Amino acid sequence: MISLGLVLFSTFLCHIAIAGRTCPKPDDVPFAVVAPLKTFYDPGEQIVFSCKPGYVSRGGMRRFTCPLTGMWPINTLKCTPRVCPFAGILENGVVRYTTFEYPNTISFTCNAGFSLNGTSSAKCTEEGRWSPQLPVCAPVTCPPPPVPKFATLKIHKPSAGNTSLYRDTAVFECLPHHAMFGNDTVTCTTHGNWTELPECREVKCPFPSRPDNGFVNYPAKPVLFYKDKATFGCHETYNLDGPEEVECTKMGNWSALPSCKASCKISVKKATVLYLGERVKIQEQFKNGMKHGDKVSFFCKNKEKKCSYTEETQCIDGTLEIPKCFKEHSSLAFWKTDAWDVKPC
Image (cartoon, rainbow, N blue to C red):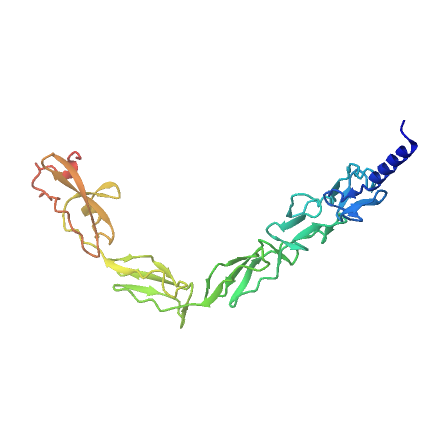
């Protein structure tokens, strides 16, 4: 039989063994802290888990007591990030984000023509609020357009009362005798200013020269300015080479300087030619001479192929070269066939 002393001794040894067990440092829980935090705990000591700022607990226990076994119970505590409220839609802008959870950040940009009134980004705080407060996108405005020197404001219709908004335009025109250099239309930009203003400069032109064998008329005043006009004409038997009316340009010269060219006398007595796509008798069509620049086509014969073709010539300042292939027949040579009456090649 086991003696009573042996039983008591065994119980004492067991008690010493159990009393000697301590609990280790508890396992980490993501986004949580434990208090008190030590390397070991005696049986009966308590610890409390709590979620870090910005995180909230979802189920599980928070308070634990170190048992005599020295083993902590299973901890099911989970700390999840706080969620900030939906940031909403930024009118006339864009909200960029990944999630609305702490500690994420969202950013804001405005559409063209709108500027950010407030912060360009906001952070979800520990309390589950956005900081700073969400911004708004305000319309871009431009001040009244400055009027260039020697110019007047021709058209300006602000979109909002007296305030110009993005893409509003203004149109200028120069005072008389002044030419515009640059675009006459300026636009309100996304930066709240106007595009580059034009410049108005006074422009003078020299008096136009009288062409040989012609005349020129222009305003009777001591100085000729931008947009002033002059008209040209020619004496009899001469024709104007260029426009009848010219204008003083912004570069300080005339849009053209016409000259007078002599008409051409017809050296052949009889010929049928092509003029403006029709067959005409040259001696009848141009009995008063051919004007400078006029073109006609003479008929010529191809003797080998027994057919006809045409060659073009032009009156150039009194000179008309008759194509060498053209043969003028005498009125007495009635048996000969004119080239224009031969089948074309």
